[in-house]
Image (cartoon, rainbow, N blue to C red; front, top):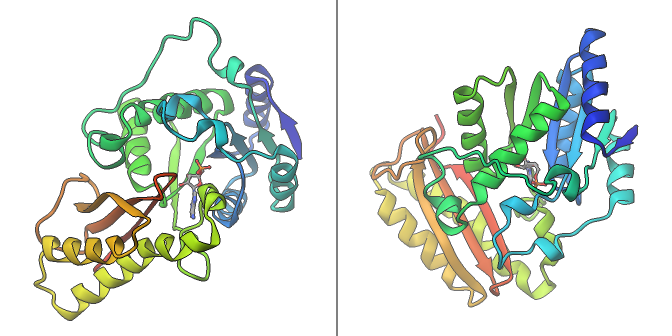
Length: 284
Ligand code: AMP
């Protein structure tokens, strides 16, 4: 596996891959790899000839009071893990190269970004779309793999790709979970042992919602959300950012639950660790 950090170098290499007839699969990440990231890489490995993984902790998508400075980072560890799953290139650009003095462009997707994580993290998705567009232009992928863990992000990226005619196929990968049900996340590393029960309230909320819907097909979104919220706030460490049931395409709240409804949760643990999770709650 090669480690690259310059946009010009990666773009040249990507051009060479393309002229040799190889397909390129990109997996954008912020590093501190766990099995969720590794499964995205394996997916890319299975569907593309050359796999590029980007590792960039993107300052543009963090708010001023967020965890940018503490975000876990260990390049040697991540290199080893990426190499083990057969990644061809780990691309880890520096911040001042991605955003040099005078950088002045921001990409904004209207509508889909206004609620949920976009509501509580103003500017977050502008940072995401801007960096992903840059990564697309630098790595020239045919395919890019994103996790369903970041459900709203996936919808926003798909919209950007459609609206701006990026010739890239977006592939979604299901959420990878710990045996406990906890959705894997780099931020889980912040969790202390005595915060684990609170962290598990998200996946337990999903299980509870599924049970409620299975028990009564006519149960309303509000009833489900109320029960899920009650269950979460039993843990005094938990502060709910949102618990929403939305249509999977429009991300608009739905009153009645259908096969197209998705339960999305964001919860802050002890005001330090913001966790998200999601799932459809009625099987087709
Ligand atoms: P991050 O490094 O957190 O920005 O995530 C990089 C990519 O990995 C994104 O497409 C995430 O949705 C995906 N991802 C993160 N955690 C998981 C998970 N538990 N299961 C599947 N994909 C994940």
